[in-house]
Length: 77
Image (cartoon, rainbow, N blue to C red):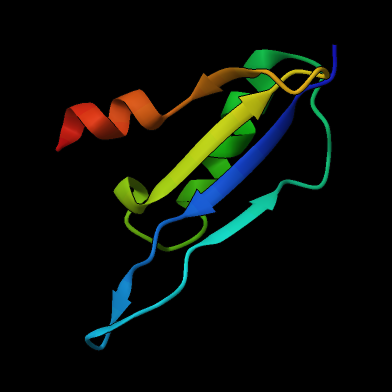
């Protein structure tokens, strides 16, 4: 089953100014849930942003969310 990853960068403040949030999908589908989650974590690490400001969601082919770091983010605050 193919999985897609959606990344949302929350509105960070840079030099006192808030930047708009960004929402985008990683370009390639992934064969397994584990591959999709690993790709999301690797992508987030490469952004150079505070990981607590970046949300990922993994969707199955029918568009249902099957994994997310939203719960981790809520628990860390």
